Image (cartoon, each protein chain N blue to C red):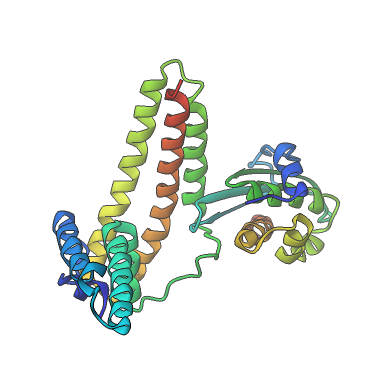
Length: 127
Length: 175
């Protein structure tokens, strides 16, 4: 199956790969997995007291589309408020990367990773 | 007629795979095109359809994870969408660690030993979950089927890890 140029670009030069200190109270971690293909995705956001995402890192074990989806998401969320980030839809990710139908679940995984990270942030800050 | 009935097996998770293969060959013989050379085209078509069903049944029953999934669908256990994300944090953290372990294998001083060790870690964790799933499937209550379904989703991650390790071995030992 042919990958789009954008997928290949993110796959070969992934942006923001790595980890943030998970013990930092400003850092939220979202972990999601896809049983169908065994992909695992970790997305970490560093969120200011004003609720702005100032840094994002990811680590994904999976296919090219999963890596590209998470790499793209880290670029998109930086500088956004958590409310704006929560609005990112998998359809926008799939469209940007021109994902074929069989790879749509990779974009769903990336959307769910943002949601999971935001939930983690909220549970950290409520407690 | 479900796949178990087609093969004349009880609807149980544990089955004799040697016997399964024997029955498969016998069934396939009974619908072989040579036997229908002089039959009507309708009978020929039915035989082809039957043969394809026997194939599907064999492939499903032979693989333990497919068999478990099939049994759960026969029991009408509600299963989460294949595409739905999995969010068990502790489990996913462990999956990340295992992926990192596999990524480290090629940098080990003794690669043989590292592959062997990785394989053992995966086997041990897989078998632990697998045994629990067997027990839950045998119990066959709504709650145990639901639990089996959750374990099955986890086992699929381990199946993927096994494939990754096999690929790694091919890469490391082919030269």
